[in-house]
Image (tube, rainbow over all chains, first blue to last red; front, side, top):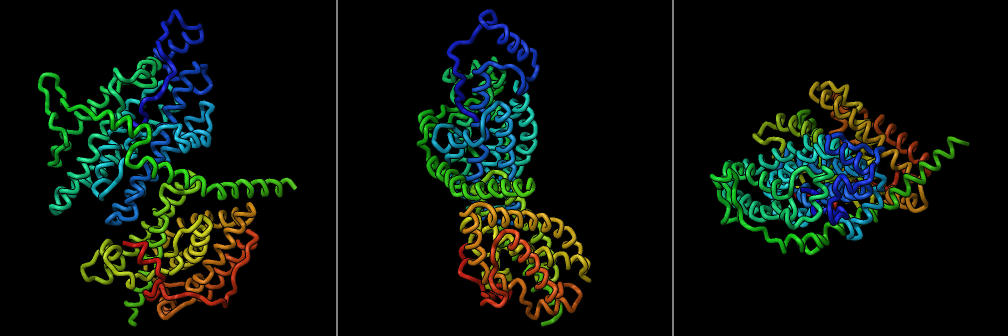
Length: 329
Length: 239
């Protein structure tokens, strides 16, 4: 999930009776699965929650370009290089649609990006882990994009129209990325040397738990989820989504001939799901608040790109103004 | 040098120049000055790699020693690369990145435009697709040169500095050697004299609109990429 722990500003859910007529009409619309559009009335909390969630999602796409950008200059074949660059470019595109969806809610892209650079806005914790070998490009595509898809497929039905429509387009591209990532790993496992196979297992070992953390805290530790579910911004809970991801991923893992670093992972015949061990929640909260392996690098790289690019953007604005003036003269 | 050798040399120049420039652009992933530029710059790099792949595949068939396109891209030493020195220069600031792109794009556009009519059908076909992409690349880089040149005081200073810095690598784009002459004679490559005129014509026109000055045509020029003698930058940028 590219948005974790989105604040809703709600401590307790209102009943229909407690709502104002506008709120009630809004909630009934949401309950009837009618999409909310930019011009419709919406509770301030709904608007703010969406701005937080969509901007977090957009920031994740943009920061998420960096761990992969780390390997783009070293991709081993022309095909892999083209695929990786195209994938990263898709992520920039996703960032762009998402910021646009966010701007329909009256928020400003530059202001939200500034919040990210000031450490006031979050992005997915997963991108604060380093990419240390080429197999990480496969594992990121397979696990990280895989986890994102589980979440985003559900978000296609989110109640806010522009967000939902952005998700439909994004999901198509993400599933392509996931297949490409899996193919990288499969090729290494089938045709690779022992060193290359070890590299795949190493990548999975490092990225498995952080991928599970992408879905956010347990449902009972997620105070904002309930309101988001009532507003149908969220459609499934963190734990439900995490379980879906694990259930669909383990057979793929077995097909690769790899393992995950979880001694408690086993199929549960009775529940029809995989049981799994406890996530290291301290690590999750540490990374989220800034103490992860790459938090500082990621933000400083983004800040540097925008700061050092300021003169370029100013030049474009100044030139456009001059051209306009000339046309008017 | 046989005709066949000249053709292989010439194809490698096209392939390597696109590939190395794309490599430089790929260093900018996640670091462009705006999100829209991120998309545009990656587009250019993807086009260049796609074109390079076509040139490498044809070259590999001609060389016919068991090496494929990937082999040619990744498993040669720096002195075997035939790219123009211009494209291996580091990104520096966005003005240098864009000036490098612009000088290259003008050369690339006119070269491809001529290759569309090459007597070698394979080359003509590859060029026909590539020239469409190069037309867009040139439009984009020209626009940026104008925006920077005629934008703010700072952007003007930066792009003028970039023009001054890179001018010494422009000579190689328009100075023909035996391979270029052989390709022209064979009805494949552009007329070297025409290419030179076109290049200076276009660069001069855009520079004037951008309120920039260019160096002299007879300035000292740093050359050698086309015969495998590179600047120090190639070895550090390429695996």
